[in-house]
Image 1 (tube, rainbow, N blue to C red):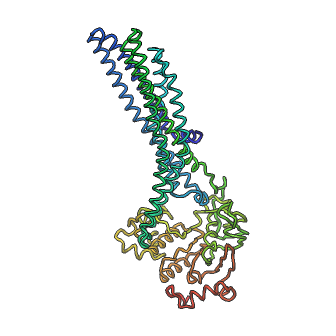
Image 2 (image 1 turned 90 degrees about the vertical axis):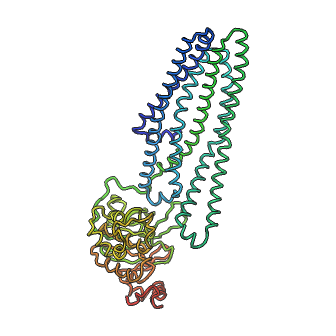
Image 3 (image 1 turned 180 degrees about the horizontal axis):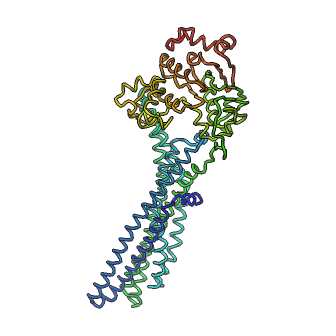
Length: 583
């Protein structure tokens, strides 16, 4: 309940709509409870005495009550819908904002599919609890209390039947809630797995088709789909018992009331109209108890979803800027001092171990190493995408943990291994680097990375629409646009994490020339090809998370066996990558 109460604070301006909706429900219920009294008078007085005037008078009163109940019910629906969907929108917004504050290490704890489910399905569950459950939650207890009170006023002897029905109904509800409560959490977990499979299958649909693995993917989907179906079946197997159990008790109560009430009528201790009105209260009271039981079921599922949403909101941010963080970065010098790093505090081994490395401002440094040598892990510590486990990383002579996080990352342009473009136009994607850039500036950076070659062939130029993730571009075209976007930031440090792997050698050479013309910018180039880093001021060789060697191309070629092996395999065989041997 704590998680649900905590989420209620996101009602904000919609709290007023919820209160007005509750008031409308109470008024509607009051009008409905008056109708059985009017009906009893109509039968016992009007029908019994054949008084048409009285019958019409009472009929009009009943009609007015029914009409007012309808109006207040419609008003409730309007206010409840505003409150439910407004509340859901604010919770989704709060989750999304929280995720934007996450560090990479926070994101590592949640699967993407799970975050999507928590922002969609789990929020929808809470919305349904308000739109479908708030009315019975208010109406049920209100009608139950008034109905029982009026039934005791009408006939205390018959009303005692409710005292026998209530414990039975309570026991049934307790059994159902106890069985279904833990199942709802597992049900939402099954939704997570289904979403994850769908997301992965659609993202990799081209690979699936290329390897003719459609049947295999269908089997994977069928498995998680069956898991969700079975989880839903197990959960609702118990929750559906609610309706037949309550109907059984309802009709049993009606039979007992008709039996004892009929005897009272025969003994002239009860009027027919009173029995008819009393039966109306029976149905209203039982319906109210049915509403309350449904509310408990909705609440049980809502608690599971509220807990999952609270996990997103309560996730402790791994990286946070200092209160008075430094906002000016003096230069692009970088210093790693005895840095050790692991992605998870519980991990047994470090991804980086005792790394000490100094890069001067304005230098161009190449980083080589085999797969898994922690090249990417090293550079991701510079803009503080992760925090070091031991040691420190300094930029401009200051520990990165002392900088304002936004200022630090604004001074570092990074092109990650995975090229990320967003739905929208080329222009909109480039403006991520500098929202104030004009067309001349955009074309200038596009020429620097040879992106103008393909943009000029596109009918829309900079306004060409890109599909999700830039699916209508080749890998090399996406890489060039990502580099152009980073250049637009005019950063003090530029990091290229294997970001020219998909472009041809001639284009890469032109990009390197453009980068070399940038003065006062520290450039770090992670590459697989020696040709990409051969002209850099310094080359760093990484091996098993450690700095194996560092020096110029000539120094490493003369003294380092690993570099010699890489050079021999790539350059002396005629440079199968396309001909940069002359470099």
